[in-house]
Structure formats: C-alpha cells, structure tokens
Image (cartoon, rainbow, N blue to C red; front, side, top):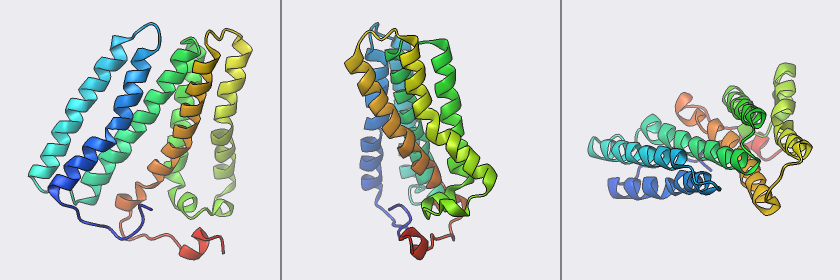
Length: 204
C-alpha cells in the first residue's frame, strides 16, 4: 500500500522504477495505434510522452528530487492516468471511433477523476458511508459509466471484431477502477501528515 511509511530510494533504483512504470502507457499507446487502421497520431504522442518522461526522470535524479513526495508521486499518478486514457482510446477505436462514444468516455474519465480527487480520504479508508448525499449520487454515476459504455456499443450494432471489443472493454474497465485508486493516492503529497484510520480500513 502506498500509505505505508514513506521510503527513500537511491537514484539508480528510482530511474529503473520510473522506466518500468512507463511500460504501461507505452503498451497502451502502441495498442491504441495498432488498431486497424494504424494510427501514427497515437504512436507519435506516446513517443513524445516517453521523451518527456525520460527528461523528467533524469532531472529529478540529477537534482535529488526523487525523494520529494510531489516530485516522485505526481508524475507517476499522471503517467498512469495517461495510460488509462490511452486504454479508453483503444476502446474507442475498437468500437468504431464513434463521436458519441468519444464523449461518453471523455465524460467518464473526468467524472471518475474528479470523484476520486474530492473523496480520496473516504475511498482510501473504504468508508463510503461517510460520503455526503451529493458524493453518493456522484459515485453512482461513476459506477454506472462502464455499463453505459457497454449498452451504447451494443445499441450501435456495428461490431467488426467481437474479441477485440471484449479485450478493449476488459482493459478499459480494469484501468478505470485502478485510475480511481491512483488519483486517491495523491493524498500522500496533498496532505502528507494524514494517515488512514486503520480500524476503518479493516472495516471495524
């Protein structure tokens, strides 16, 4: 768990970890481009992100910023959120690149991001009951977004490759919920002194 005691790491270890983490957006970007027909747009975007990632990683390592909470965690949360966005691009491409689907996925992304950011503490503590009424309504919208993706895709009735669509939904839905947790972890630098209530985490 990321909310364990903050650990300092060496510069070489930091560089290795950062390069390993980029494999997720790299793979997602390649798959987003690979969907027939090949799209150089998504692959070129992924390459540019890689150059920025390398530059930031080396900058932090050289100037000793790799053990600063914000400098280490914010880029990780950001790049993994980008990986999630690219999995939505994969889903969008395998479902026919429909404009309405693009808007549905776009709204879903920001609904989940905003919810996870605002209600990070109760989500980390698995204390949904402590969320106010507005937050619970927001949570319902966030939870049903993947269902809306599926219903809309089926309603269109233009699926060229069912296996690709199933894989696209699988990746999209998995990253959707992983993304929510990643945004919650921003509490580690937004409020460094906050620690989750262990009793609530264990459901006591």
